[in-house]
View: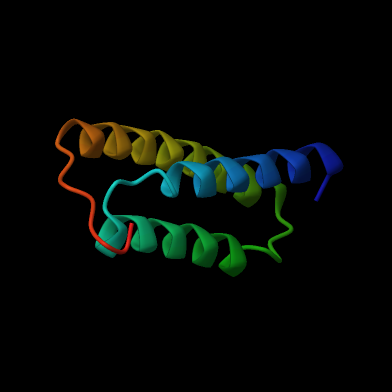
Length: 85
């Protein structure tokens, strides 16, 4: 994988983790999103095909936008903090 693409993938990974940590609900949403992001990147870590990598980067960017929307919606309808938070 080219260095530019690698840095783009790492940046996307970090942004997705950061946004996932912003979910207001610890119980389901936050842990689920974090687990899904980590699992998806681990599963595709050895991928070398440039077209497949580019397709997954685009898909990751769409997922990042989805996570951002879900976090915004979650904040609009926030509940009381639990002991775990």
